[in-house]
Amino acid sequence: MRICSLAFTRELLYDKKNSSRTKRDGCRNGDFRMENLIKAMSAAAGSECVFVQEEMKRHTTFRIGGPADVFVAPKTAGAAAKVVQICRESKTPFYIIGNGSNLLVSDRGYRGVVIQLFRNFSRIETEGNRIEAQAGAMLSAVAAKARDARLSGFEFAAGIPGTLGGAMVMNAGAYGGELKDVLEEALILDHDGQIRWIPAEDMEFGYRRSAVAAKGWIALGARLRLREGEPEEIRRRMEELRAQRVSKQPLEYPSAGSTFKRPEGYFAGKLIMEAGLRGFSVGDAQVSEKHCGFVINKGNATASEVKTLMQEVVRRVRENSGVTLEPEVKMLGEF
Image (cartoon, rainbow, N blue to C red; front, side, top):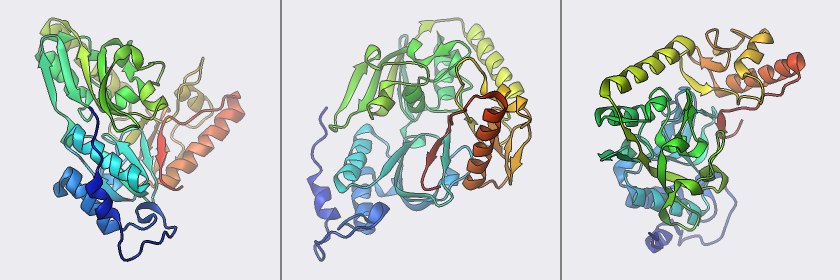
């Protein structure tokens, strides 16, 4: 459906006492002020969903990150669309997150609006052999819902530490399964402010990519088509895959998941190990001794320490193997 123009926000965001435009940063861009932005966000999403100077370390799996100017956690697709439109109309920088996996936020935080589609945006419903869920639903929760409904085909995602929205952005997959295998339709918000369902074939899925990322859409939800299965077999497979993750990955420490993309023909973790970097540290940031493909937070790591460590890993792997690693982790804010 078409999102109506938010005429009411323009009055909230307009500083009648000073109509001149002055160059400022983040949420103080031009002639509208922080308090007016907060009022507009509160009107769109509810005041209980809007926070100021929210520490991002509370909202990332790395447990790292300074404050965002404004943090909004909308509950509905309509509210999310309104918040995005406010940002676009006021030319305020914004960034969408789920549970904060695969993300490193600057120690300085983020000068803009962080829109979280996670706990407030995580409804899951089943009907027949289909599941419909909001983008903030954890993949593990969707897998559990499928198991309880005697539906098979989503077991591969049970141990992936991310949300359905994140999976739609990067076509998440593991152990031989990918989201593209089960997605029927995707609910997205496009640049025209339209919320619409699009068929899976229009998602342009590839290895760790989709049309959501390529076209700048925002993932709001999905419909999955699964198949009937035996509950005990589904449960056994999920437990088996979860056990593999626990045995191979450093889940006891905060991290952002796999730190580097898999180079074609290689494995990032193996290249890092062969470069002699197992356990290599910068402050409390460390290359995991359990799995060299993970950079972990040993306690109080800073974003600058993680970035320095990553740069050194890239340099030494290139010197040792000739392969240049590319970050899988997204970086947000000023570094």
